[in-house]
Amino acid sequence: MYWYVHDFTMHVLPFSCVSTKKRIAIIPGDGIGQEVIPQAVKVIEASGAAVQMTQFDWSAERYLADGMTIPSDGFTILGRDFDAILVGAFGDPRVPSNIHAKEILLGMRFKMDLYANVRPVRLLDAGLCPLKGVETKDIDFVVIRENTEGVYVDVGGVFKQGTPDEIAVQEDVNTRKGVERIIRYAFEYCKRNKKLDGSPRHRVLMTDKANVMTYAHGLWQRVFKEVSREYPEITAEHMYVDALCMQMVRDPRQFDVVVTNNMFGDIITDLAAGLQGGLGMAASGNIHPGKTSMFEPVHGSAPTIAGKNLANPFGAILTAAMMLNHLGLTREAEKIEAAVLQAVRQKKTTQDIGGTLGTSDVGAWVAGQVK
Ligand code: ATP
Image (cartoon, rainbow, N blue to C red; front, top):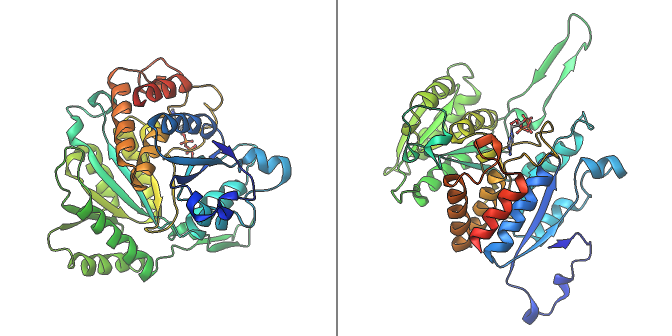
């Protein structure tokens, strides 16, 4: 583990000395990010993965200390000098504007164009699911969320603020290019990835609210129809997002690959995390194929439990495994996933999922298993 130094000596090494290790930027961020990311790092180190990790202190703490959110060349450094980025979470009650989170996290997603937010939904143990009669094999789907458009682009404003005539407008931005590439990503994901039991994936379902948002989601409908024709071996399905929420709780077995816009993806993956045992269990990747991609647990900084050694580190550890897999370090990723499964089965877990251990003990147990 190296701490951040600005002059990266690796650029001046002669070719014969250039390391083949994958270079990972580690940004723990705020709140429980500061607790769960060190566990993920410990587990990566224990796995023996050929990586070189460099830690950055970009966070609320840093912002409060010197006003910096991310250096002006921060995104260039990340994209140029690293193969992947592992992030904890951003958000701190001492920064009510959340400016640092917007500039760092949304900055990475937008400026590095990480358009595919991939959120696997897997049930590791039936006891973790609040639904009756559900087995582990019943929940194994993935949500592919568009990550660079929608209402997150911050287009809009308020007019006559503070008066009875106030108007607030926030635009939902959907481009042909953005919609097409995320839908195609979902079909490609379906084609190339298997379920946990080794069976192929074969269905892509798009969810939207095209019955109300006729213009914006009408575009999604047209593009989905077009792109799905290129994949005759994959079944293309559709469900309105309100119906999907109900179906996810009634019968999650029916889902395979779900593709949706930025906001619906955000919302339905919290619901999906509930099926997996809570926010502490959910992993995610922010991906642009061929470019430096960023991996982060689905949960936020959870200020109410931060600093108490209560946070569940599995979301962060499974996120690290997802990142290693993405980098081609599949053997190490499998070892880590197997160790988390063992920890869940043996109740070596934090309290949120029924265990008695603290965050760091869980991390140490998993690291011990993968060694
Ligand atoms: P954001 O707006 O960044 O998504 P949020 O406040 O909506 O953040 P989280 O920070 O993810 O949501 O947390 C919501 C609640 O979920 C927390 O207060 C905590 O009770 C629980 N939680 C989230 N992550 C974890 C975790 N890793 N371990 C245990 N509990 C967690």
